[in-house]
Image 1 (cartoon, rainbow, N blue to C red):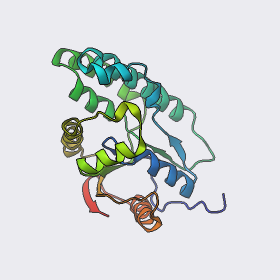
Image 2: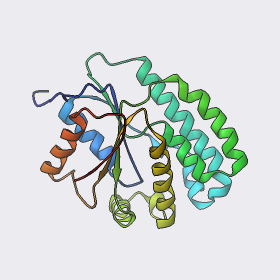
Image 3: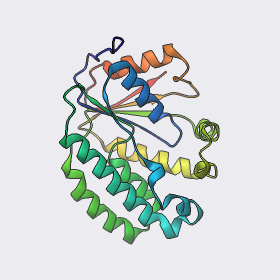
Image 4: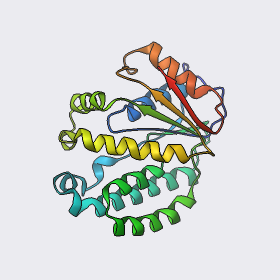
Length: 218
């Protein structure tokens, strides 16, 4: 690990968020390679309700969201209850509140009230992120990214659905006052293959940010 570089800011838990296709997981892998940090990556392909959800969303919305919530909770709880002493901090490609945002968008009113009660109990069992980095791209760019990575289940995602998810994120972010939130406008920047762009993002994460929202453009 000769090339590992430690960030200057003292964050224990950094969450990378963004819409579908924004590049969250790719960035997490790059940060882990650079900093040698622990990784928490969402295992979305293991959700057995996801294929039928894309075909019949109203019928399968509740089980698909319930499965995501319990799996995310299990993953985060296991990670933070058994800290890796050889890793200085954790980077995840989601934060647990994502569970509630997607559920609110996909469930009917009665289902969401029940879901919200379950979420409130589970959400109290592990720490919130010390920094939330939200990767923002226009919907047309997201659609290009989704098509490019070629996941079969995602190919029929509509622009309207991506807009709804984006609005749900921003509605939540506006209410977040305790956690530093950096909204990074990426446009069509390919930080995976542009070392200078990635270096800028890594530098942003290494900075100390105050609680509340900060808008930056790459």
